[in-house]
Length: 337
Ligand SMILES: NC(=O)c1ccc[n+]([C@@H]2O[C@H](COP(=O)([O-])OP(=O)(O)OC[C@H]3O[C@@H](n4cnc5c(N)ncnc54)[C@H](OP(=O)(O)O)[C@@H]3O)[C@@H](O)[C@H]2O)c1
Image 1 (cartoon, rainbow, N blue to C red):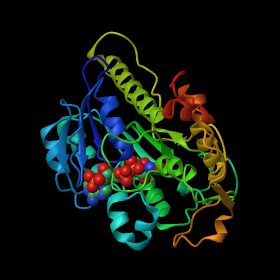
Image 2: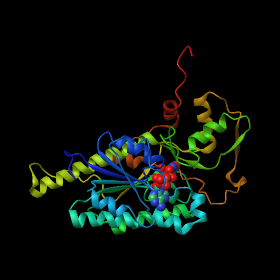
Image 3: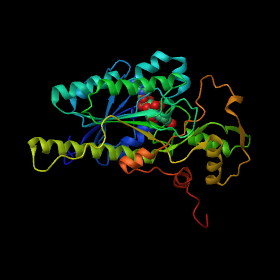
Image 4: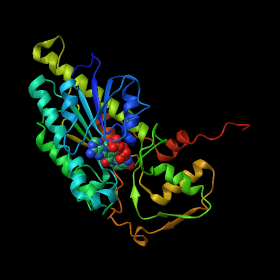
């Protein structure tokens, strides 16, 4: 992987919410390929290459790796709805634990000599929710099938890829932002909240379930930066090995886990109030209640707010406060309108 050449980047799950934003953002700097399961993107940049895959079997993925050498892989594919995972645990595991992807990454290195960097999206739901502001080295203890499958995914990646591979595991909180270019076939967090707080009838928001929601634009910047730093480090290693002048670059991250959340601990009721403020619609439609008051059919950890100081300390990366991002997403009407 060399910083001076155009990099080939594969975004798996490119048709999902985060994936669509990443495909568009990364295509500004790199040659982007993306995978989809059921929804090929009509709106993807014309330079982007689509691959239809079934990640449960690896079908389509092997062919993508045979056709192209990837310098970086961003794994956004998942069965990401906890309720769906709970009712179909084996199907969730088959997609969420990326064994076929790891097979392809290992085979690429063996057959083509190119070690792809892997940026893998995990979740805050690997934590059990029993305290506030989780750190990456805290003991994990997922309480539902989704969290268990995502923790198993992390363990699969770390155990199967040798340490020489650049691997960044991003434990993402709730991802919010504008609507994606194309619908994703499920309710979106921020759009649901915005519609509820504008509604005529009250909607219940839990005041005892805390998260550190993360702005999708921050994830675009973070993934872009991780790809660039991995490329620079690989170029430095190649120079050090005699392929050119210069010395080794610092290996910035090898098998590193990062909490990828916003900078705050917010309850769902806090988030609803901030959305209502951004929309200027008052708090009349927000009814606060305890999470225990509603049976959602799937266990949900109470407090999985995250300490995101590792991102700042090791990558110099800061995420955007919720209120600030909302101002960007819902700009106030221009004067005189
Ligand atoms: N969204 C959040 O708030 C959130 C919070 C924490 C962590 N995360 C994690 O962040 C990542 C991205 O989340 P997201 O919300 O963008 O996900 P998403 O919108 O649910 O998208 C999931 C993607 O996975 C693909 N996929 C699912 N099953 C597949 C299969 N069998 N074969 C091929 N592709 C398959 C889907 O393809 P098709 O749609 O084309 O079928 C889609 O592109 C996931 O790893 C998720 O666990 C998300």
